[in-house]
Amino acid sequence: MAKYDNTGDVKRRRFPFFLTIFIIGIVLFIVGVVLIKVTNTKSLGKRYSYNETFEVATIDNMEIDFSAGDLNIKKSSDENIHVTGENLPEKINFSSSNSKLQVKTADSLLHLKGGYISFDGSQPTLTIELPEKAFDTVKIDAGAGQMKLSDLICENLDIDFGAGSSEVINVTCKNEADFDLGVGKTVFKDCTFNDSDFDCGVGETDFSGKLLGDADIDGGIGSINFDIDGCKNDYKIKSDSKVNINSTTEENELLYKIKLDIDNGIGEISLNFR
Image 1 (tube, helix red, strand yellow):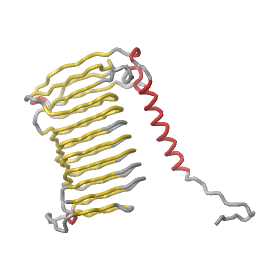
Image 2: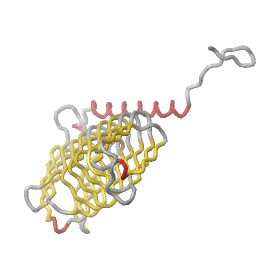
Image 3: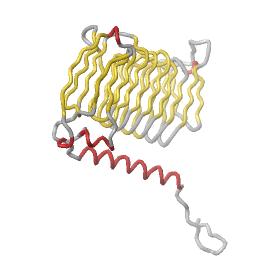
Image 4: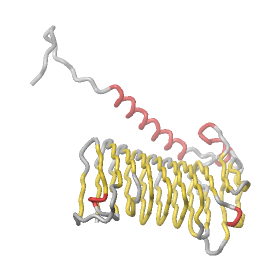
């Protein structure tokens, strides 16, 4: 039934201002990503290849800033760290000092001057092969493109995803893990995290593995699914909205409760326990 104001006119529903701004921001971000992808920037910067080997004994920390392209961090076939890249813009630099391996992208407006993305087959690719070692702190800032991280053990992990698809497979973080997810699909498979923070963006987030410490899960826009290798009764779940919770057992294995703090966004969140 229509509602009327004091003058007899029909009241009009007002679309929430903050939601309008948020939607406009998302649209502008997606348009920006598309414009970068369809812009042929090959002529705007030189490209080069990179191939270097580092002794693992000299590296305890890693800081990877790869603004656009395909990033693959995987297990090494020997006891050394191997870094290889193709079609890399000249604004990407590599260094090793003070026990840190660093890949740094020089700042530039939208990174267009570096010629990062084009549809002429010159997509930048970076592969980092790591031997079996417990690293201290690993920071990864991945921009537009695809990222795959596998077979990593570290104390602290900080990953900032941009736009595209991301996979995190068989990764163990013993202390704190922080994930800032962007636009696209992110898959965590066979992972083990202690304290963790998931800031989900726009798209789909799938997790399978163990959460051994307190976790914050902030929902964005899209679906979030966590398959947790643990008993439901070992977790204290706090949520500001409805969360789908499934469990195959009512047993518990721990003498304490692990906290799961969930802030739902726009979409569905599911927690599945064994």
